[in-house]
Image (cartoon, rainbow, N blue to C red; front, top):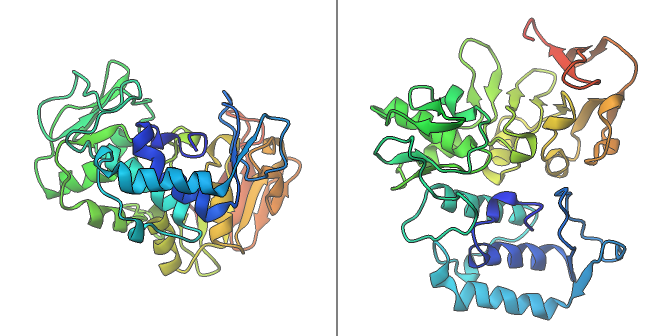
Length: 333
């Protein structure tokens, strides 16, 4: 569970409802692999025993779920009635995001076990918003809300509290986009739901280009964009999979293509493929090194450039990685 959802690592009681719901919803038997320092993705394959997998009966997991949902609700940051637990293919993402968000907002009385989680950096000024010690210096908050966040001693910090509604909106966009849930608020702002539903957010000055938000720790906070076009919409790299974002993309006409610049920024590409079965993923052959990328629908070979109908001109720009790609579409690079 921690490998699939690293942000759900606050405490055992904190993640049990999410874990039990996910397992009961997806698998008749539960596979618990030994800890993997590489943080590879979990596999639901009960036949995979060479990694030390253990199978626990469904009844045992049901007992864990009962303890988490009924006996221990006071230990969680909020009560989760059994009748309200979601089901279906969005369960995993919704539960993961629910617990990520609850820790992000720093609800009163929540004791964190992860090192630095919830600990306010001394570089923050007094006020509602702050950055905790888990910041990975990915730069996300500093370009989304530069009026609030700056770099201080190798990590981001709040050096100016939001002064108006626009500042609050930008700070909340930074909070929800933070890949590690390191941005917090002592009191949850009422505007948070509207901010979450606002993504993808139009990029100022560029027509039909949107910021996807919801950056992923698996991509070290890389930025994903949503491009809207008459011949099909495109995701530029993969954002963190989140049910409300997927719903909003459905409302915008879905997505036909996922253009993956390089291996570092593929994040939750497999989950987006599950959500949009007709999605065609594009990547260069040099980047196909695990992470499920061998399943991509279009693997480019050679040095290009390649012109792809409905996408644009794809150009090989080696440097960061051997197969790093850039996209030229409607005079936007």
